[in-house]
Length: 329
Image (cartoon, rainbow, N blue to C red; front, top):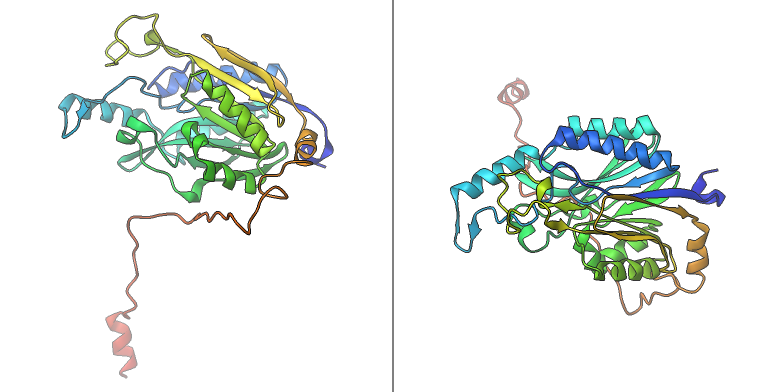
């Protein structure tokens, strides 16, 4: 019997960490250390922030303005593209190996490179190191649209794992009520919310989602100072090495909206909390947003999960010339 049905509580960890922006190898080494530390606290699920591998370029304008781009901005994008990862690819293999070495479910934000376009993604790994899937952010926010492409409905998984039904919604996707509804309809129990939003109001949103979805919400953000970025990094935050550019705000919320851990601000930390999936059924007794508390006779949502490709190739049905020759004999 899986733990998701046995009623045995277990420990989840949320990482409020500082990567080495744009340095894949050193960041992967830090991922290993942070996972090991979380597992030493008995964590069975470890959740990392948005864009932890590949980097969240906070404060960078990429030399862009309405009507134009600078050569320096194009070069900055090229460098950012070089720091991103291929999915599948060697970095995915290494992340899987980290999960496997520590026997833990791993959820981590990355920047995916697909041809000339970058995507903000979340990757999922099982405790044997298997790559379970990915979610591409559907809607980059504000200036993120300059550097990231749009995901589609083909990567919105809720994975049936030994710990429970696991999925992720990235940053301001959490303000998209129809996306939340789609995830609730899939029965999400472990709602991961990697983010770059450090505002105190973020915690209130996470509490609302936990109550609305009757699920555990695990929100993870980076903690970043200006000194964590390369010296040559062009940032609107200036050159004060101690300036905090991303303050955190990570937290873990239960299905009744109760804060179990955090919110943490102004530091690197690992938050842990006990997950008891029996609380989900207790909560849905009086509120199941896509079940007995829905009104499908009035409100309905249609979700298109087909992959949206800009190029569709229709093979020729014409037979080879040799076939025509054979048929004439």
